[in-house]
Image (cartoon, rainbow, N blue to C red; front, side, top):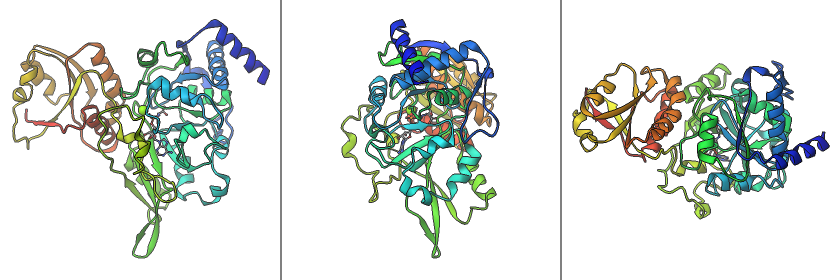
Length: 434
Ligand code: TXA
Ligand code: MG
């Protein structure tokens, strides 16, 4: 097995495939239905099998591979202690060096190798329930680990926790299983840009990067937003003398707080576990966080962190300026034309909800509008799927400004609005009446 990987790695180097897109057929990859403990994929399409083997060999050779997940595309590298791949991930993305990475696994047996053995018996009571319900899927959980012994120190950035998720995308899971390695992977975009939801998005950002061996193309990502990051490793809460485990949502994502709460209630844990959604400091305006190791505000006494380092950076920004527009009957200054007065001669990109009237209203005022629908007003799943690809498509269309219609802040709509606020540089929406 090992020698065939070495042989494949040599072939890779000699054919110089840097950054090329390798297609994978999702339908040809399957896992036995009860296989989360040690998953072995079945791959029926020969080209897909060949491409997955090529990518797996590259990962074992400490090279980088971009791959699809159900949330967004990831930029993967070997996560284990001693790996030389992780530094390449930071350089390739231009990622601040204090922002730790999520480790992706294909089976629960891989999880065992990442968790500090001394603390395995004391893991939070909510974890087995959450993993059972949401894995494989867009939920990331923090575990205690031993950086430098179990995972690369560069994955955790000096923290004693590791963020782990089991992706549901068959190509991602098959790749990890074939490489037989836990794979560290941030979103495969240049830091600060909207996350990629197609292989072309990855190519647009990372093409020509010397450490990127290939991009596996598994089509459009289903969820379109990154995973939800949670931790129950922090302090407990005490209500009327009764201690409760606190499950903190550190980053909103593809699993909504409502879904987490429903899962806890159904498992009979509502009295034992309190769900909290963390609030975050505003983003830095720069993506250059090279010196931000001095910001230790996220480290508490036992080295377990109550928030997510990545939340403080500039995120999800297309090239064009983003302005959020909220239709509300409470608007004090209801004039859309006034809000758009400085853009009347601009090429306007519009991400709008269907049948709310904003599209028609903007078209009536502006000379050139490029509209993209996010879906009907309460179709939050569609908003999530179309958000990043919409922002990227409008950048490609070279618009001067992007107007985005706000949706209700419920379920996935809350995550989409959180991402949108960041895209808009944390400037609050303009309220208009139509
Ligand atoms: O869906 C996703 O999560 C995608 C796909 C590729 O899996 N990945 C992704 O990774 O969004 P990235 O690097 O863009 O975001 C990871 C987030 C960051 O906010 C980071 O600070 C946080 O997870 N994180 C990672 N390890 C952590 C840790 N040990 N403690 C707290 N936060 C952590
Ligand atoms: Mg990211």
